[in-house]
Image 1 (cartoon, one colour):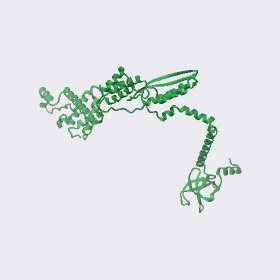
Image 2: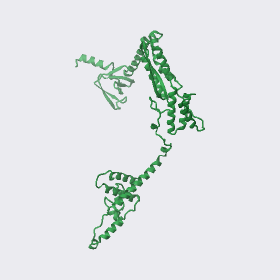
Image 3: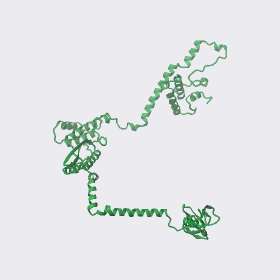
Image 4: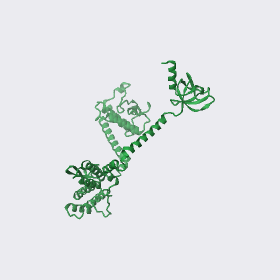
Amino acid sequence: MTNDPLGPYYRLLKISATATEREIKLAYRKLAFEFHPDRNNDPNAEDHFKDVTEAYEILTGVRPAPKPAKAQQAGYRPGASAGSKPNDAKGAANSSKDQKKTQETKSPRPEDRFAEAAAAYKAQQERDASRRAKIHPGARRHPKESTPPDQAGFARCVVTSVVSAQPRQVEFTVVHGFLNTVKSEKINAILAPKGARKLALRASWRTWLRGFWGWRSIVPAWRAILGNMRGGIFPPEANAHLLFNQARAFERTGNKPLARAVLMQAVDFIGTNRSALSEQIRANLRRLDDGKPARRVRDEWRTTSTLDMFLHLSPLFVVIFMLLTVFGPAQGLLTRQIPEIASQYIHDIRDQVQGLLVDKAEPYYIDRDLLNMREGAGVEYPVTRRLARFETVYLVGPNESFWIEIRTALGEKGFVNADALVPGNGSIARDRWCAQNNCD
């Protein structure tokens, strides 16, 4: 790269002479970001930024490359003129006017170079912005909403915080009773179908816990639980006003078909009422009529699942089961049958675990000071381990020419001489031998 006239510019951008256009661009962006005068307070940062910009423009062909002689003379700053020392008195006597004219024609002023670099940087940013917009066309596939959802005035569910096409103003009842007093608590909230099921279940459980402590509150508590299980109460006027505002919010966001469907739900609540609100709902419905068949959303409020019924009445099932267990046919289920079943089950598991941990084969112990355990039945096989006296082993295979396969307590397998094995437990035999020989 020493003979390349563009070598100093590659070195200035800290890249190789074989760098691609993308690598040149990335190196320039990195250095320009580092030495930009608006970000770097170093006094020499502006000069470095100009040099980097000039090197980038020369390597990318924005400006013509200098002559080879001057490119070789360029140091860290390719744009700076290195000058030449005069070899004789005639070269030293050049007039100042000619030098100034030559400098103006061959190298631009610093101000002009900075302006060109800034313009080139701005143009590059604009090209990159237009290119990025073409990379991901799927990002512009859907039209942009005219009004953000958070500013459109949507009614959100107080439990799940979701925007629903069929919100409702729902009223649930919680009954509190103690001795001769009874008190009813009304819970009103704007809910989606999923949030309504959760809030209804909370109200029923609160009634189960607090509503059956007085003789006057038993009937109201049952009515409240059954009403909550069916979905609560829907005030017509409040729901019509809620759906009217929700339809206006959908219309502000540009979703007119869904706004029309929400207004049709509001019409179901107003019926034949001729109030000011009903007239506004009918007028907006006529305005949104585009001649196409009206689309209705699937009503999720009229269905009560079996799971919801079971959850609302689960305390009742628990009480019935306890009564049958104590006084009915299942009287001995908790006191006798369940303990027996559990005991038998635990006993079976313990037998299975003991069968895995304890070997049912008859134990043998070594009757020699040291006994070689080999990999095969013969002296030509290598020794796996030396077994100590009174070590307990278990027989695995039959006796073949005085060689027998054994398994140690650690799970090791090998072959030993059959005449060195004695039936019995090794620990018992060791204790007996120690007692006879008075060993410690």
